[in-house]
Length: 302
Ligand SMILES: NC(=O)c1ccc[n+]([C@@H]2O[C@H](COP(=O)([O-])OP(=O)(O)OC[C@H]3O[C@@H](n4cnc5c(N)ncnc54)[C@H](OP(=O)(O)O)[C@@H]3O)[C@@H](O)[C@H]2O)c1
Image 1: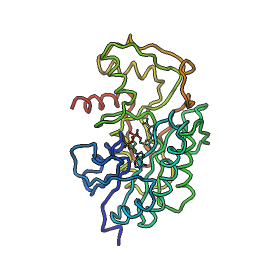
Image 2: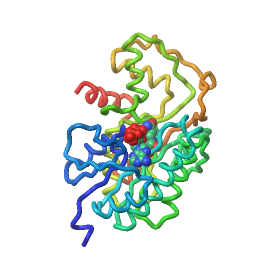
Image 3: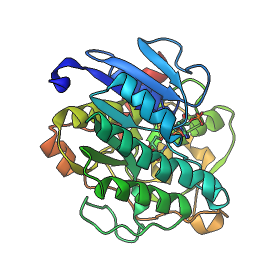
Image 4: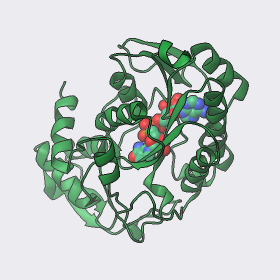
């Protein structure tokens, strides 16, 4: 009975790159509740109710969820500073594990379905592209925390789905630069850039992922789904495609190796996803690199 009455969704991490797109993806047909750390929402327009708060605060989260009684909770909140996680371990674990434990607990109290966003970083990048059933082997602390977050769901009786994604890009208000927006900015200023050609993955347009997450939520299907763009590409060739689509000078882009950079956290090199489970079971069509960039171009100039 409770399920029939409510058409509410709670979106956590609502001020982030993915969160802002989720607010738009659920606009039609839902009463949208947004949860973020900031006092005010970053997305200025849109029909949603904003709540300020921290998913790691269990009593707060529980009472918020009991007040809203959402049908779905979409967790796009995370500690996403991959290199910073190596030194800020407690802060990272607090959001990516304790926060997820709290969401599981709160979701179960009201029988909400929880859709949690995870990452390809749970894999070591030795043998991608990966399928859902492949064995994780996280390399850094962020990656370990995200796998622990997944395991919290797996070890629960909650109604849940895990959507792993990667190389997210898109537009948003006051969001951190992502690879695509950063590269466009550099090339527009005629700045030479060094881009690795030995890191492979599927670039994923955040707005497209948000729509796919709504489909996954509504499907009621349990378990893990790899949700990303359809094409595996290395970063250097991705950068060249970005330059082409935005009419920028690809000669400014120099191919280098990951070993030339000093990064605190190791990166999975040969990553990438096989997404046929998601596209087949959920009847989704995810863009390839060129298609995603064309869609992004329309969002970028509008
Ligand atoms: N970006 C990628 O390439 C990528 C790749 C694979 C997977 N993912 C996953 O995709 C999801 C969304 O990532 P994103 O790129 O949209 O990240 P993002 O832009 O960094 O957004 C994450 C949001 O979570 C919020 N947040 C952090 N701690 C919180 C807490 N304790 N309580 C409530 N909110 C909190 C942050 O708030 P503030 O803005 O106030 O800090 C931020 O708005 C994450 O689960 C991430 O692990 C991302």
